[in-house]
Length: 135
Image 1 (cartoon, helix red, strand yellow):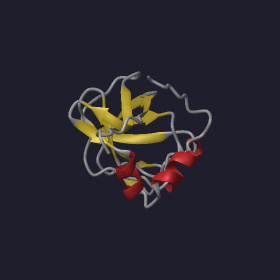
Image 2 (tube, helix red, strand yellow):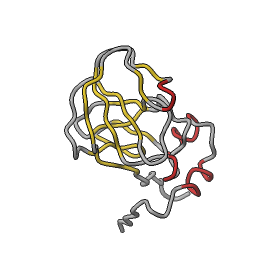
Image 3 (spheres, helix red, strand yellow):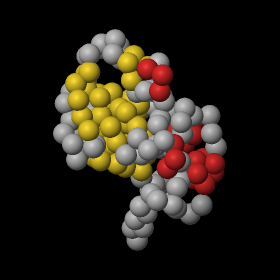
């Protein structure tokens, strides 16, 4: 091609709940995920009914304050729990797909992690997700 293309898709959500969590405490369906160290548990309002893969447990996400978090436990229907090392306030943006500073998580990363195709992921994004088209 005569020009280079860059990925522009972003999937973000704001933290709606944040609480400290101790090593060994359980999270998620069936309490089958246990945190390995003390930290903070964040809740964001995106789940598998929005098209984010249920099996993304452990997937890396980017926090607006520069932290890297990981999905804790299975992705619930309308919410996702994220483990981070330091406190994060309600309202802070979490990037599930996109860039924060020099860090990025691509749709391709998510597809590979969850053993899905990029096309399947794109087709599964629910209509209730707000779409903002930037020219």
